[in-house]
Length: 322
Picture 1 (tube, rainbow, N blue to C red):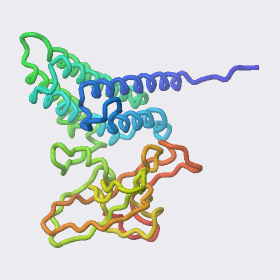
Picture 2 (tube, helix red, strand yellow):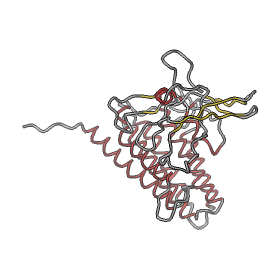
Picture 3 (cartoon, one colour):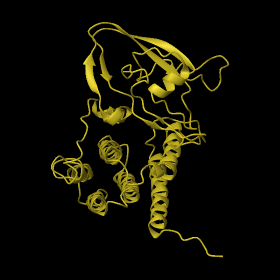
Picture 4 (spheres, helix red, strand yellow):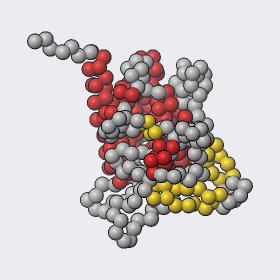
């Protein structure tokens, strides 16, 4: 009986994904050791944000790529580069300036984040060797610049800033990979972030990372849908009653809210939209308006029929929720 033939490119992809998974896990562990997860857990417990990062990463690295047989979407790659650029500022530069991390620990954190980014890009760009080469060169420069942070005779804060800015210049701006004059410039336009510096991650909550800033001219009622708390016995946790993401559309049922708002139904704390609350926002408040970004259902968790919650127009032609 003949043994089944396994495609060498598939074997290589699996190897790269395994490396990405291990390096990303190491990144989260280094960040945890450096106490960069803000939640202060009970002694012996693991921070919620660490668990969420870890489990989401495992799902993304092991279950998402089949949706991208011809390569990872440019916006998804840009998001990862954008996140690394900001993490280098938050986790390395800012921590050094506030003296919350020693140069040795800051260097270790930066190197772990650079390594995880490179492994993830290598696994994402198996069909795009040119782009992978550009990303690898940027990471090589980043690692070299980070390596002197803890060396005698060097200014740790200054060197950390140089490392972060060098990465930005090679990847995100000008002639960098995603820059307007870069190799992807003709087919990719980087989104403009309307959010404050420390809230850059909100951009990717919106479809195509597109949102606009508005100042309310009159008081407006929004609707927030959320799930029952895990333990419904009093006292009920009210932390989900109001949230950053609300809609002007009052949904008739949970299924519609889940679909149109692209609520994540993966196995890690799904939003089942079992409760709703009115959120009254006064005139003069700055809000950010956009269409909900897609959530890939049936990929992060099993479903009888994998689906995509688009967060876009309803079947009856109504405009998308805001």
